[in-house]
Amino acid sequence: MDIIIEQMTEKDLPQITQLLQAYSASQNGGLLGDFSLAKIKTMASTSLAVIIARKDDAIVGVAFSFPMANTELPPLVAHINQQFPNLVKNNWLYGPVLYY
Image (cartoon, rainbow, N blue to C red):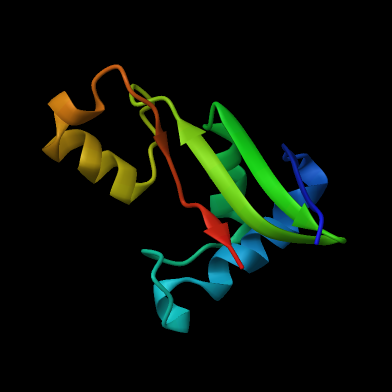
């Protein structure tokens, strides 16, 4: 089982969307909200980095890193930033991270 960890490219966006949507709340998954392609494009464009895990040709994991000063944080990240400012100060927040 070889897993390749690499930076996301634009061609990976549809597969990341499919992976995240499969684990969304509407699919009885643990991720908050739903994940359209437009939402994933916004998340990727406002992230410091997006790292994927690939097994064969399938993306099996993804991690986004967000600068906490970003004005377009995903809702959950913005909530964490508002509720726990001392916790996130000088830190990066990563998520969601999925691996199957």
